Length: 244
Ligand SMILES: *[C@@H]1O[C@H](CO)[C@@H](O)[C@H](O)[C@H]1NC(C)=O
Ligand SMILES: *[C@@H]1O[C@H](CO)[C@@H](O)[C@H](O)[C@H]1NC(C)=O
Image (cartoon, rainbow, N blue to C red; front, top):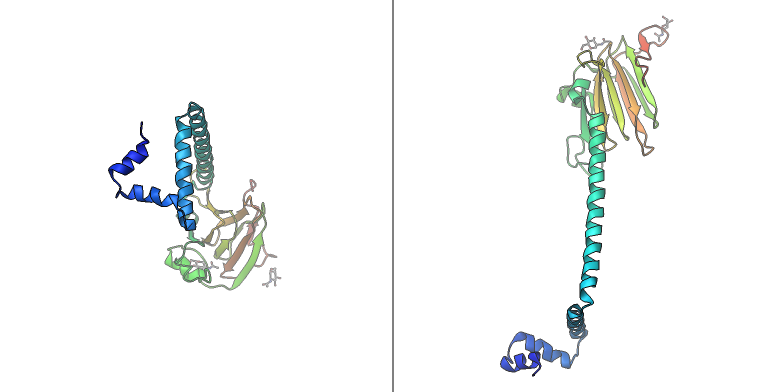
């Protein structure tokens, strides 16, 4: 019986496929050589797949691909579950219940991140614009500092000043006394390391910041008070909460 490729070529000598095959007989350029190698690879593969050995090989490839896709699915669902658990654990309360507004430090452009240099804003103005009430109207006394992982700042109640906070840099919890919060008497908000938060604590309201970061990042904190707190006089209640 005649070679099917040859008879096909004889039947239609002007077809493009025949011309390509013809050109392989006198390969000149590296490009043509590459195509010839490719065709020969596929023809060898075709022969191989016709052999009885092909079935176990295909089965093996299929099993490997299934295993890879299952592994990928499992790891991505693990990440989703982890994130959801963390979020549902930390964000039961609404930002507004803790007098807080948050901004992304990675989304550009945004209200605080207007050009490539990074974010900057006036905390008192942005708090007013965001409808955060009860903070300082002017910075008579200010504080700048950090909280290392596991550290707590605040956990006290000032009776002589309103205070506005800005904090960022690590996974952090902000707790603000809130008599309307059922059961616990406070609202607690989780802020991620890629966010910056502005929060207000009105006079006579307890507040605390807790660095809960698991990647050893530091929380940076700026606090603005509308009067100078005299720590020699009993105008501040300390250790408001004993669980932190
Ligand atoms: C705190 O805010 C309240 C309400 O805006 C204001 O009446 C008060 O003067 C502010 N300052 C202090 C030190 O209480
Ligand atoms: C703080 O309070 C103490 C006790 O009342 C007083 O002696 C001191 O002068 C006050 N300090 C300031 C800076 O007002």
